[in-house]
Length: 212
Image (cartoon, rainbow, N blue to C red):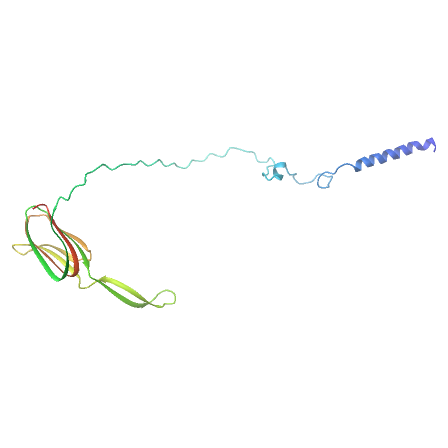
């Protein structure tokens, strides 16, 4: 070997060493040596904690009006009161069944008022009516109807005992309303005749006065 070829051999060996060193270099993740055009994931994004590349700046929320807070209710106690007794005197109280019957009572009222209260229980009639349903297949159905007997009635009459003049009257049925609870009030003293009459009814009657 001539000394003139040594520089060329040395250059070739140096080139082999350089290429070998380059082949041992580790490639970046993804197998690409170039820079990707996408936004590289951050540690927070890869760990599932959200992603903020810095375009949004944290700030204090805009203050909003707080919802109305209701004041606690004030509990008031009713003043202690002593129950008062009935200021009137009961002179008659009876539950009677009327079947075309009449009862009469006289009373000299010296301490008004005269209060007559009564509750009427009329005889009830039950009927079954066959009709056609207005729903679905319009089958025939039976409708049960319950209502007071047309013959049920009751009447209270307050008369002047001397003249027989009617001073007050009220009742149930036969021209009177269907209300079952009623009251007659007489505020003037006098000698009265009370008449209770009726049919197909059971009536609870109470008579009270200012005193006896």
